[in-house]
Length: 538
Image 1 (cartoon, helix red, strand yellow):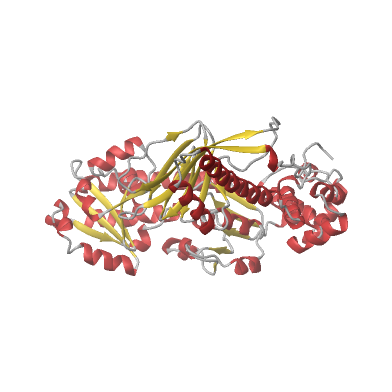
Image 2: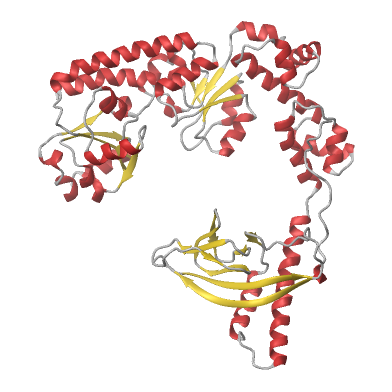
């Protein structure tokens, strides 16, 4: 086995509780509200922040924690601390305890939990009582009272130390095997035996296999094989490497054995698999880019099966919507490959990885035509993608020439999207791609300024009271959904809206949301045609 290990099973140095002494420095009760100026505070001593009432945000160096009543955070010496209340008109109260740690053992590996993290305090009611007592007796007068005060503080600190050290050292066998499963996801192509995995987890081989099957449903050997063949299927689809190279890349030094395992798991040899070209592709974001290359995905979320996708992509299975995905439906489709984007949350990505290999294409970093080119690169269809893009660019130029006589160079045009109860001023992406980039219409001055600094911008959410900042000679409004229609009706009664120049001049026009809400190559091509009709007939 190579030098990389799944996780070290060497024990941490034991914590000698008797060897720690905590020197009390100060304790204070602090009230924070939204009017406080947020300035970083740095101390040369350790600190504990115990939230006694309300909620807020605690920033420790570059980490932000949402703090609620009962939470306790430890802050190391030299770390920047900011505490803020996030609820308007409601204060957050906390106890701040400052102390130093003195160890009788100068071993640098001695461990304690008081280093820039959330820690356990249990029970909170008892902690609250101790802290209130420490506040009340903060300035003991006699030596005996001082000794009693410091003994009370020392006892509480050792309780915290014991609670948190024991918690961190209690790693169950099941957790150790879970770490092995995570390790194999990144190291499945390495030579590693079940015995070695069990040794690293610190448990016997039989128990390791039992727990591994409990977590994954298969043995370690079967799990590694599944990961290897899944990666091989992805490489067979998206790369042009020889089979021997793919076999070695996924962990098989013997091409013959690779062929045999591939057939056992998929039902066909790798060469047959790669030559059939009957791949089942599931798309999370790029349905229209696939359709533009005559690749019809077997499944996609409903919000990517809009007006233009629907015309070419009949019978594509709906696998979910913005708020929920149907993972059982995805599994039933048995895709060979998932084309995804980089905007999905971590949990969703983890679920998808269990279904099929994934290729991730950046969403915001690329324009729609670049999405298409990236899809072409994945499937070896670079020429087809370039041909489509060349035709589209020609269509853009012809559209620009066509509307020149109908658009004044001095006229500014604003684009608003209403979705649910929210209002967005659009930039040069989505509808702005056509109106501003293709047709050359002038955005409002503030939008123009923002786009110079940050091009390729979808837009920004605004309040009704801010709309005057985006004044334009003409407004196009996209109303997306039933709730948005109600929002727009209410907006039209608002005095701020009525004072806008375009509204007073009667130069406000709604445009079809089903055609203009989407951002992909097929939609953009259709929007060129629809945009000409809108501008010529306005």
